Length: 168
Image (cartoon, rainbow, N blue to C red; front, side, top):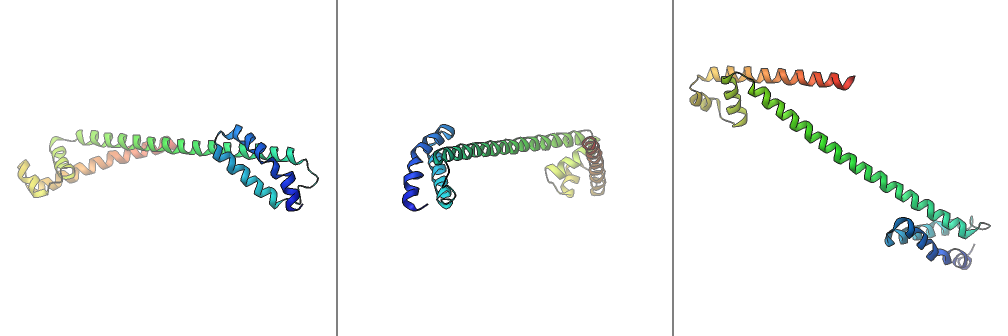
């Protein structure tokens, strides 16, 4: 098929292809892009088009390309929704874990609770905590170590429990 034959048999269908594509896609730009892409494909396969009902073939190609495009949009939207959902779940898990850690700290004995709060939350030095709580520095270190150890054990137990729940 030469250029003149292509122009008279295939290219004349571009407006009809466009209107058909626009019914599926609604967007004029997307419909124009789709028809332009199909015209390029048809030109590349111009020799294979001989003997076909060109109009029927062209409209069938438009329909298939439109449906593929719409399916792809649905997949992209589902992926975006999944990412948002996953992000929300992660935030909920992090907030839940923070809440549990705060509860673990609140369940500590009073001295350990004060020491861990002043050191890890307020970021005071051991010497400053010693002055504030009127304790020896060594006692502050011991209470801090014990408090962290208890919180760590409770977090480990929580994680082990959650791991068991997922593996079932």
